[in-house]
Amino acid sequence: MRSGKQTNLRSLVSKFKREASMHGNVTIDPLASAVAVENPAIAEILDLESGELLDAATFISARRYDRLVAERVSIRESFSSKPRFGCGLCATPVYLVASHQKRFFFRHSREDGSCPSITRSELSRDEIRALKYAGQRESLAHQRIKDRIVRSLQSDRANSEILIERQWRSARDGESRRQPDVQAVTPFGRIAFEAQLSTTFLDVVTGRRSFYRDEGALLVWVMAEFEPTYRRMTTDDLLFSNNSNILVVDEETARLSEQSGVFQVRAHYRIPEIVAGELRDRWASEIVAFRDLTVDRNTQTAWFFDYNGEATRLLEDQAQLALGRDDDLRKRIIAFWMSRHQQTPEPVSREADWQGLLAELSERGVTPPRSDRYDRAVTGLMNGILSAREMRPIGWDFKSLVQVAHKVADGYPQHVLAMGFAIRAFGCAELIAAQDKSHKWEKRSMLIRAKFLGGDQGYRPDEDTLPFLKFVFPDIGSKVERFLQEKMPQANF
Ligand SMILES: [Zn+2]
Image 1 (cartoon, rainbow, N blue to C red):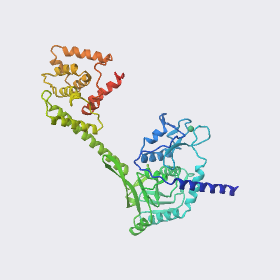
Image 2: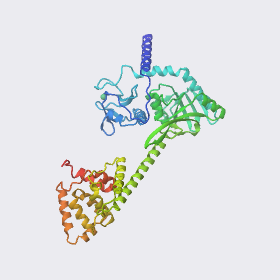
Image 3: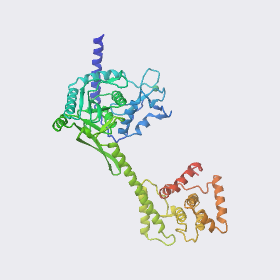
Image 4: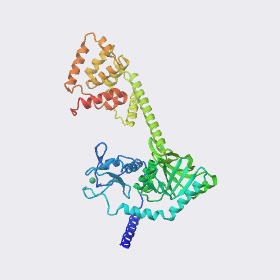
């Protein structure tokens, strides 16, 4: 019986090794989009908080690889206490699994045959884990890294109570315990050190994280080595849930710790940078004092370089810069228009200036309005709104603002609504009323309002110039857009 089981396990191990060597390892660019497996067994997942059904592949591919990996760790971690997602068909809690190719899919927490989606292979993960883990713990490599961690800790007088493979009993629940590779009291308090070799399963990782967090302690994962361009899934789980930092203790750092009397580690991390307007990153590493790391018990992280903080700062700067550039372009478009002479023919260079401004708009993803003559498409729009803003006629040879209002209603019915919003926004209704001695505009505007309310398409705002309007006058543009969506949904007239 016993030998039969062992033979069975041995064949499993060799099968696993065969598979692993066949598939090799795929290392993914952290900033690339995550990829879902094709035809996943669980096509839809249920958000257990909102009750919303989500397409599994869309959920996955909408996320960046590094962020999805960090999320997968937290999905797995909240699994036993408060699962976040369930199977779309049977609502059994699900978690994210990565294939050999690092493509993602969701898997049931239990598979009892009651759900038509089958997500488990014949190989039981528990069996494999037990095998690989047991084998690993006794391996020479594991022994070596443990020794180096101990040597490093012992060389630094700031550390005490260094224990090797001794039980850590929960202070809250005596039944609950873990056995970290090494534990010590450090300047950060009591810390459990675990050596991560090539294959620590995700639920082992997350189970320990929860345990030490609940203890108010910290678990620090240490690797024997790290190669950025060759990363296994288990490494990525640690990396991206640790602010993109990996800590290595090797022979060189152990020796340095002994020489300096300060516990040193090698930190590998990503440095974000903006290249041609886009976030990129590069790998770096540095030997640093352990006590200089930033640790956080709540997130169970210990890192040297603040990747998330730095990336966020860069992206915010980038957004600010874009806003500043938009604002500058907006001012130049308005300045161009303010200095334009409607009645006198303008030199060719003016048209070139205008085309240059429109080209800049295109670069920002704003589709400029089309017209046969260079400025015709926005003449009524710009003259009308700027006249309201300046409270005097702009672009046209009129005496009063009320003449501008009539002109827009006569010649540019598609911009009447924008003009109306501008009159209100710039507070010139009273001025127009005062200039409207014959009450012609008063009557006309009531008529126009009635037509709008009746769904008349005659004054339908022009969608061709809407992107331009939204860029140059964002407040007015978004009001026009909302009106089009809510009050005039009958498009294609
Ligand atoms: Zn199911």
